[in-house]
Image (cartoon, rainbow, N blue to C red; front, side, top):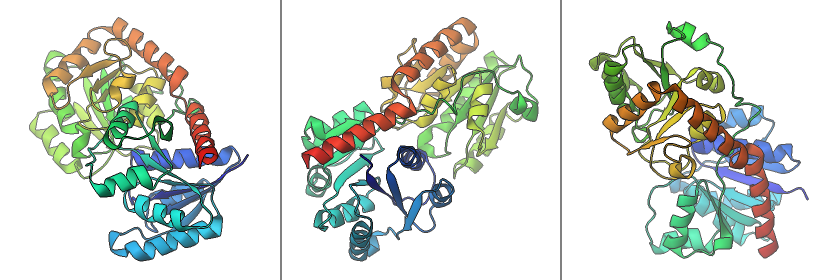
Length: 368
């Protein structure tokens, strides 16, 4: 039975959380559900949602507008009569959930928790996680277990649904060579890369420090950083000061992420604090061998030496040693990449994500 689903996303930028919300909304719409996205008027997500044919309702999400925002959410719920209200941030989880609880429409309220950052056991947070939502979605098992223990949640009210990979988009295969040609990198030179938003918590500075170490052992190795963000200027300086000019390239935001991944010999995820980064499972779907930090939900996907290599966060030396291990052992790269790809096929596809989400929505409706 088709559902009417309202997603609220208060962020103005674009990151893993926003792309996950958009992907889920598009996927559910493709399955015949009616989906509405409540977004800031200036949200970077808005044009992407409208291009996808999704209905967008502009709402000014601001703590200073708490009362008016509750009223606006109430009116939005009255107008669309949703079966599900799925919130993704803090201010929207408060205002949209309160409005939904007050509404005679009585929609099911779902709180999606995308982050691994600690949550205090304050009375307000107990209200936010135990009382207001009917159910909670996390993007990894570790976050689910943390919230269950933190707030004594019933197991049937909280589910881990990692971001699924669309295997029609992220198809394993040889790269086109366009990126290497663009950067002047020869086919035989190892290419090691990161695809990430450039924030301090993403560990890109540690990646650059590791690149400086690896380049001493493997002078032909080249490094690429795809992404943009406020760390960019500092990273450019770090690359210059590390003597990596012409060795480590910053290529900015890319719309051709599958093609970038396809040309990498090794994918690196140096994040310091993350739940389940989509770039990780996307790289694995492209049969890229992965070096990743053991934080958040990453060890749920990366079994050290089997589906990738794990290193401690914030440790450029360990990161460099793991990269060097892959550079020096093509056989290990192939074996690990194949095992990682098999895992994605079995447990982390886009369709599986939608299946579990639909099932959880229906379960909560039946229980509410």
